[in-house]
Amino acid sequence: MMSAPELIQTLTRRLSSIAMAVAPIFLRAALAVPFFRSGLTRWDGFLQISDSTTYLFEEEFKLHLFGAEYGFPMPDAVAYLVATAELTLPVLLVLGLATRFAALAMLIMTGVIQLVVPDGWANFHLPWAAMAISIIALGAGPISLDRLIALRFASEAYRQ
Image (cartoon, rainbow, N blue to C red):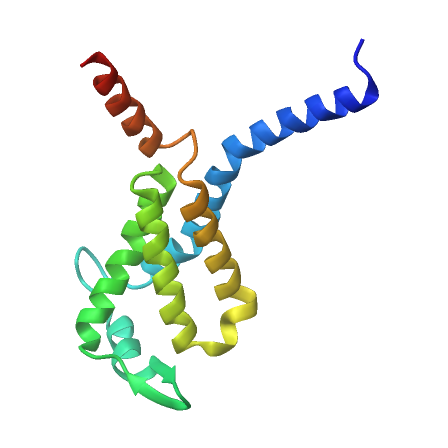
């Protein structure tokens, strides 16, 4: 029979093990959803950026730097790049493919968004940044394509 401290330690280890398996999945999904939903609003069809997206990047979105506002350089190209990233990066995250790189790109996007919408830091940008940094630190987790690829290459290296 286990003592109370041993039982607590065993339960804590099991709980930690389960959390380490599922936490990356939830982090990946939680970060992916707002970006993907935003990305869906940017298109008017296959490879056709919506007029409202183009307008936002040309006229409305400004970078707030050093007390001044600056427009985006090449706003149409930036709009296309952002619209593509907002759909592609969340898919990579959900699949757990190139996860750390996708999270890094989303962290950079969050930083730029913070410069465009400085008042959004507490409700949106801080949690997004925290999730992206956590994903970069933890990796994709055991339930991911990254893990399958790593296992595949590890088994090939072992056979040689």
